[in-house]
Amino acid sequence: MSTLPPCPQCASAYTYEDGAQLVCPECGHEWFADAAAASDDERVIKDANGNLLQDGDTVTVIKDLKVKGSSLVVKVGTKVKNIRLVDGDHDIDCRIDGIGAMKLKSEFVRKA
Image (cartoon, rainbow, N blue to C red; front, side):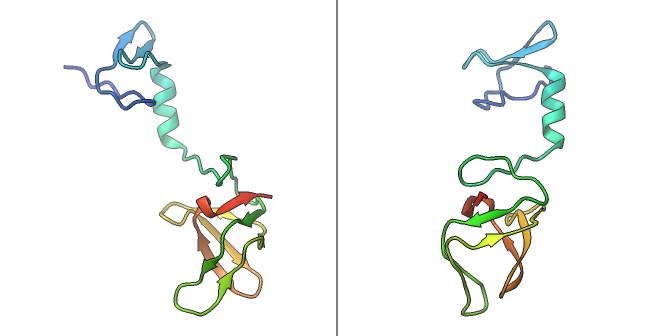
């Protein structure tokens, strides 16, 4: 049995090759095998609105966030400049004025 990757849209394991492309019989999605291997290497991080985030971007906090271990709160509308994208649960590493270095989740920010 071949070791073809699952469908990137519906995660079906019943993919098959059709020439240079891979096809999913359940949802009908077609893609190139080379594209599937390349997309696994790079991680895509998006904000709450679905915009692509990159290192150095400026983001705005969309929800009050309590700072763990202190009584400080990062308020809605706080602008965070020059973010760095990192691996992990909290995928944004930044410095917030008045608070200091923090890690944020991308689901609580939007690109400014």
